[in-house]
Amino acid sequence: MKHPQTNITSFTGPHYRGMSDDQCRIMHRASLDVLERTGVYVNYQPALDLLKKAGCLVRDNHVRFPSHLVEWALRTAPSRITLYNRHGEPVMPLGDRISTYGTGSDCLHILDHRTGERRRAVLQDVVDGIRVSDAMPHVDFIMSMFLPSDVPVAMEVRQMEVMLTYSAKPICFVTYEWEGTPEIIEMAEVAVGGADILRINPSIICYLNPTSSFVHNEAALRKLFYCAEKRLPFIYLPDILRGMTGPITREGSMACHNAGVLVGLVISQLVNEGAPIIISSARPSHLDMKTMVAPYATGPGGFGGIGINHYYNLPLFATGGASDSKLLDEQAIFEGTLTLHGSMLAGGNMIHDMGYMESGLMGSLELLAIQDEIVSIIKAGSTKGLDFSEENLALDLVHKHALSADFMGTKHTVRHVREGWQPRLVDRQNYEGWMASGGTSMRERAREQIDEILAEEPRHVLPPDVEKQIKAIADKAVAAQTK
Image (cartoon, rainbow, N blue to C red; front, top):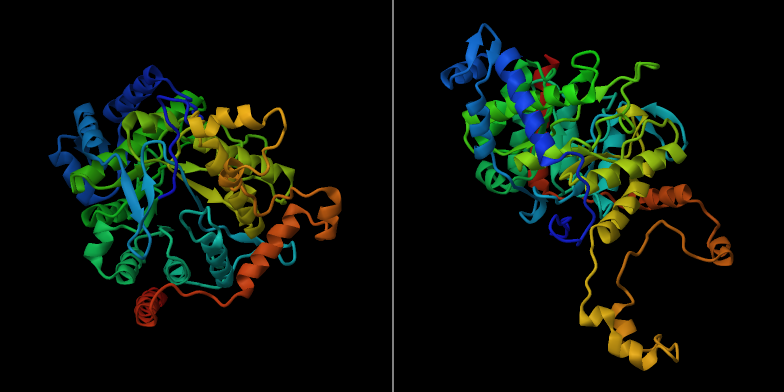
């Protein structure tokens, strides 16, 4: 698994901390205070029953948590999760400061690379997005990217069918209500050869979005129970809107957001001790009060709160590659690069939303292809430290050849000439060479790369009989929701 880790104790890679250990302790205690004094609403009776039995103060659906229960859950949740591809190979470790990268889900619109126009996404865009994502060497996991407007029911089931059909990479999936969740997991089990294999070698992650940090709805908790019972990894990400559903101050909203995440952590461990949960603490949303739009890329919070996740030593979900721009312009590139690099520096494990634009409402395959190039240089250069070995210092070679300036023909140069980052889209030619090869922009080269991928015969990663079984499950789910 080629996922380098940024090292804390030596300068083998860059490192950023937005919070000190003392600040993490203060915020953790503040979150415990919120859970113990204020409490939250839990709108799922099985969860209320578990929490009451565990010692929580439960009145109707209002729950207050004793601090010791949270501390227990933090000790029992696994600090490291490994995701597998559909071939059973470990390809995506989550934990420590290892960063992996992937797309996002459910954009309503697509910036069509063929026409340059913004339009509603359809199921074929999901197919194209997965095929392009699968071909990108530095996209480690896939999400559906688009919400197909031409699928009236069970959209998430059709999305999963596409993802399983056209890619063997780990999948992060979203369901909007309870409906579709068991069918999607059954499809994933069929794809790998059974429920036991999926549990031992998980290749999917369920992404849960409760109503807010203070309101935990039935659908999200029912899905949490289902995943925890099966020991399948899931992300628990409630939200807080600064100045609306939480304090407008960054620190207060971070503590409230973190409290909501801890609710999911506690419930998951009560359902099944050791259940694999991925958290995303201390990253509240906010509205730009001038526009009433929630910015994805340049909003405060971002990767600064990732420190609390490392303080807890739990796998974490982060954002990178997102832009609030409506065009594939300078804003899109600088916001996407900033969020990708910033999340890596902070030690984000599962960095999602490559190719996202318009505050999560529009996706772009061109931006995805360009960001694959950006991630490649982040992986190659930013996470690799210096190695002052005898081979790399090459002092004997310097003594022999420096004064004659003749290193080109040495065996040392031949051994190392192919090392370092090699671009796929970035142009490094002189002007004449660039003009002779077409004088294209990076965006044009990205379009060409996408067209080449989509012009090939679609690669189906599953055996025909397995693909048929998965389609039958999807068809049955669609029929059930059509009634």
